[in-house]
Length: 120
Ligand code: SF4
Image (tube, rainbow, N blue to C red; front, side, top):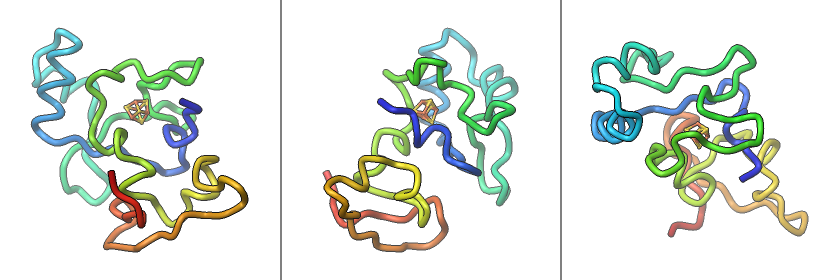
């Protein structure tokens, strides 16, 4: 894991109710406590997102580019860049530029829900 996607400028990680429940359980926290301490309202005010550090990186990214909640990380993290990308992801993700070729990107809706041409 290079962690580049976890440091994307203006990147956000939405979390569903089910994801909140599984992350909170993994951390030994109550869901309400997790929501209060570790999430904030999304910029578009549609749901909750994981908090970011002051440098913009995800709060759960370690200095060694590891995810502290890796076993239960949100689906959005699991599926990038195989099922979705942002319009600027190829500038950030080295995996999207293998052999100098970018994967084709299909744009669906807002910048956080773009899909790649490949799907697992
Ligand atoms: S939850 Fe983990 S994988 Fe997802 S952005 Fe944060 S550090 Fe990266």
